[in-house]
Length: 156
Image (cartoon, rainbow, N blue to C red):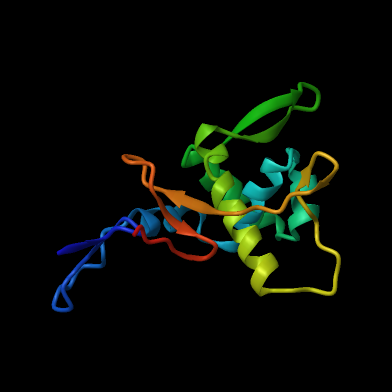
């Protein structure tokens, strides 16, 4: 086996019968479905009530209920009561959920670059202007940049 350093996955030989062991695959098992990431986006933007999340994502009620339940079970979101009568709870990101912010920014940057639209899209505010995310990947151990501007970055 060899490790793909850029993605942190262990490459298996072609004769292997087991899928590649990879944190990306494990993560996609939780947030790899469209509605899950759209829910995380809404929570990231401060939308906490079920009805508001449903309106902003367009998710069917049953699908949204299932996604919220799975995100809570996975520790990405948590419920917090906001009304006693009637009893109501809102959804909020946990630390694990907030740690998905770079994933949202990477998807935002990719979509803005590769899927241009004539329609006005929601934008992340940043002070007095629109946020223009630039994704850069660094090695945690040495700090070297390994990915920048959509391509691997090699040191001389």
